[in-house]
Length: 396
Ligand SMILES: Cc1cc2nc3c(=O)[nH]c(=O)nc-3n(C[C@H](O)[C@H](O)[C@H](O)COP(=O)(O)OP(=O)(O)OC[C@H]3O[C@@H](n4cnc5c(N)ncnc54)[C@H](O)[C@@H]3O)c2cc1C
View: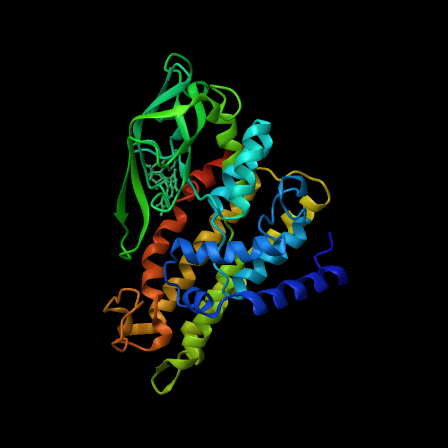
């Protein structure tokens, strides 16, 4: 295993860096740095810039509009875009439903949906979870019944991220109540403008709006919007969840936030000296940095395996567990570093002309800390990831 970048990979890294520095709009970059929730037009603007450069779908094969990059190039791209404050690309089309469509969809579905994802014409959301069906997803009850050329869909999805922006939802529905739970599930593509769909916001603890409830009341969905075969949705859903977990280590984002944490710890003082020189804080900062470096090397080891042709398996759950825990730890230390300035929680200051209560370097940090409780829940909770490792990797 060779973890060093080749000369060609270093040249590629420089090309990505230069492209970002020349093309990322300054206002968007500033908003990402301040950790403010982004709106669809801002995320779209960056996606369109990448699309025009031919980098719209870093993880897709060339024949479907992707870059065809190696796993190492993809890693470099993720690292650089996170380090240089690029908005994250919306994962629902690119990392989730796109690969399902090009792997299991019909030619017509591929031709219609894939180009629209890469060019940011269509936004997608993920309609998996329901009240009572999160970890136990196979118990979902949203039902789809055939009526002529359509399905009629009734049900209630919850925690649907970005549903308020989405044009389409990929949705797990129950088409057969008589068979084993997993065998009665189908994978449907639903137009969010269909009559009978209502999106209700859920405001999270940071006062942000990213998650929603989606109610489906007699929604007509053409049978042509079924992916693959009826009753095989669980297979496609599991394929998709595997992709979701490998992208969730967030090494680049954590490195960026760690850098910001160090800047704050240099600027804040305790007992007349910079916080970064205070032994107990310094030790905890070093500890999380070591853990992040270990995660990065674990991630690189997986990538090296994948590059040499070994398919990634359930062991990638460790990336989700450690990545989410490290992300939470960094934001805990940032709140601690802010001290009493973290007490009056200020909402994102977009459009406000009053000075912030605390130092400018504290902006957005408390919101990130509060929202960060969700890191260990979404994408399959960490307890479930530990179960996967126990059963499928350790054979317990
Ligand atoms: C911010 C956020 C965004 C989300 N976005 C989306 C989205 O876009 N689309 C979507 O479909 N879903 C989304 N989710 C839902 C997410 O996938 C679920 O919240 C998650 O799967 C957990 O399900 P649950 O909330 O029903 O909790 P439960 O499954 O009820 O779990 C409650 C607790 O019990 C633990 N637990 C459950 N079963 C076991 C077990 N067998 N062994 C050990 N512990 C167990 C869990 O780990 C958890 O701590 C989002 C969630 C959040 C918080």
